[in-house]
Length: 232
Image (tube, rainbow, N blue to C red):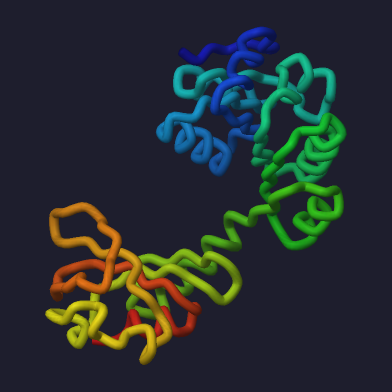
């Protein structure tokens, strides 16, 4: 059960020993991330300076505390240095974000994820040595742009120029085993998974036969995957 406290002591050390993540900054992004981690079965230590945010999440995270994450002493009292993974989700105070990341790096935290509000902020975090810099607003904008411009039902960019696209199968792909469709040779993409109406997702193979109401996951170069998703 989550509880409110200023310093975690032995409680946060026990959390750190489990499959756990410390999330610093509990604004919209940090809160959403922390709650999603909890839903997935990961213990979460949430840290923020805003008492209202801390109180609001008091019963929803494994532990939530009010503390100044720019202070090494406060983080050590919370045993944050014993966590393998820490997310710095501070977005409204770039200076606090940078200082917090600097302190965490100095403490030797093995893996740090940090939110950047723009390219300049991200560059500074990268120069500090932050392991993973993320751009939630920028990435969401790119994702939505791809959805708006095409027939894709969902879109995830794995790396620059390579994506997974959720779509409906084109008519020419229906009723024929995928192994006989010549899909990869003609379009340069692969159907990795499929979902029948009302059923779960399954891995696709050469014997998979699709129907017009199915959903598929297309894997391949972004332009090719999006182009294939627009076929009818």
